[in-house]
Image 1 (tube, rainbow, N blue to C red):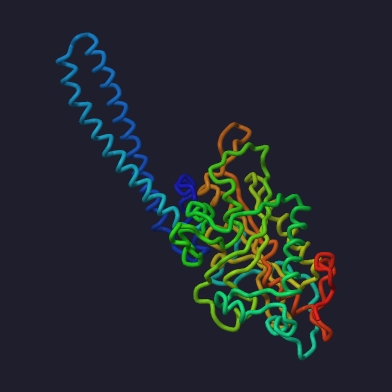
Image 2 (image 1 turned 120 degrees about the vertical axis):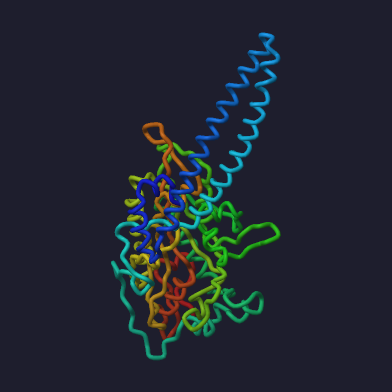
Length: 423
């Protein structure tokens, strides 16, 4: 959530930067400033009325003490009227504050200056590419056919148990999945991230804190009886570890990693491009999260990019990095880089990670602050990234490592799987 003071002091810049998202935020920005002015006017009036009421109350007390009962009773009617005015002003102030908060929830984060113009993923800017794209045999199979051939993932069984998008991993498929999770966590903890086991359901306040609510409620599974939400990513519980927290400057940076299943309704996702592991309603992901001093957040961002690159280089998968354009960057993010792995059998790129800097946007919602060197409270910066999302990494391994004699296991994973081929 943008700070209203920031909007007020940078009105034209906020409107211009939000135009990169292909939205005209003029009306929302003007309304936010107007509501804030009305709120501040009401607050001033309320404070003045309370002060006047307190002064009269003291005067009445003094009059009673001095025996001037008639004068004291005459003033009591004035204080009663002032108390009613205070109640009315408090109600009006709360209504204005709520209206302002609801409006601020609807205004997305302002994109970083480096975010390119664009309307969709077709306008994203490729900034890096690495890895060797293997030449597969003409009879090479996509991962969903390989999964069936080697009996390692059963999509039909998952459909019977739950529905489309809930695969069942079997045998070496399940062990490869577990190996990837452990490998990712080991890489992250070796890099200084503290591992957490996190809840898989969160309350509404947690969804609001990281920006999933009220923006993405249609994409989340909602347990209505308890008003809880199945997590779309470990980012939500992991970042909310620090909601309503005042840190010391010496506490920063904070680095968190965690493995969780993730649940996304992905309403309206159909067709061949979402076949197999390409788009799921339940999938596994290892996340990295950072809470940073504002002066260091973009250094941390570059460090997270380098960390994910290192993992993909060890897996020896062909990948590229995209800087998301204004029309594709997420609601809460100021800057996002996407990692995509090349699926050779499908002849297409598949997104496997997003690394984002939210600057103060989430921290303002979370009330996540630190006490700076001057003793003042300041909002932290939050960042997160996939390290990594498993389904498309697994798809990339199955397709790019397939041979006539089976699917080879990346060398770095063999100590985790205990086998070097799926055949």
